[in-house]
Amino acid sequence: MDHARILNFLNSLQNQDCTQQMDNSQCSKESLRSLYEKFTKEYSLQRARTLSREERLANHLTSNSLSYGEIEFTSLSMVFQQVQPNKGGVFYDLGSGIGKSVIAASLMHQFDICKGIEYLHSLHEQACKLKQEVEKQKSLIEQEMEQIGVYDYQQPKIEFIQGDFRELDWSDGTFLFASTTCFDPDLMKQLSKKAADLKEGSYFITVTKTLEPQIGWDLIKSIKVQLSWGLATIHIQQKKMIQVQQQQIQL
Ligand SMILES: C[S@@+](CC[C@H](N)C(=O)[O-])C[C@H]1O[C@@H](n2cnc3c(N)ncnc32)[C@H](O)[C@@H]1O
Image (cartoon, rainbow, N blue to C red; front, side, top):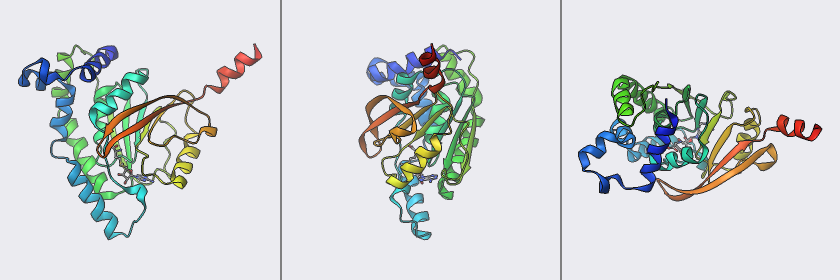
């Protein structure tokens, strides 16, 4: 995939309101965001919140960490413009809800695989349904990619896993996202501890809170973006390149 073309296109989403620049039909045809919106139309925030609330009530799950909210497509695209990761790699959304950000990531960057881990069964089921629908639209995605000049698009594999990310292995991740605003201090501690197993140079994106700094992460940038509950700060962290630093010291 010509990654630069997708980035340029995502940039243009930021810098212009395309509805002002083109007529609506052209805009909806040409926009990755429109494609994403088409796929996720039936997967509303409201419905996800209701499913989450019902499952938590039924199972007496009172932790705030399980609160539901979503990152917007444009906000996630701002992260990709800042980071510009290399082609390939493994994307994770830790606490992936109904899977929308995993689908968004699969459209924004040529990862090898995009995975989501979600604790609540009802949300995981929705994510699996969404995955099936998106995979059926492979040729439509390729057509839309061609319209923005990307001729070698290969849809990343998509995988949703039901479970607790504190217990599962995600050490193959190279680009990780966790919407951590409501995660309690103990969960942040466990997340930071497990993140220590990730490869050097991996990116970890968190919201409002950062990983525990002593675990070996550099804070690359913090940006204010829109989430479903309002403006929040996204922190882009990168795992320190310890070996390179040590070699430099030896020289
Ligand atoms: C704020 S929502 C984010 C949804 C999605 N990532 C997004 O940004 O659009 C946080 C999600 O994390 C899930 N979650 C919280 N703790 C978890 C854990 N230990 N393991 C897996 N999922 C978890 C919650 O159930 C919830 O769906």
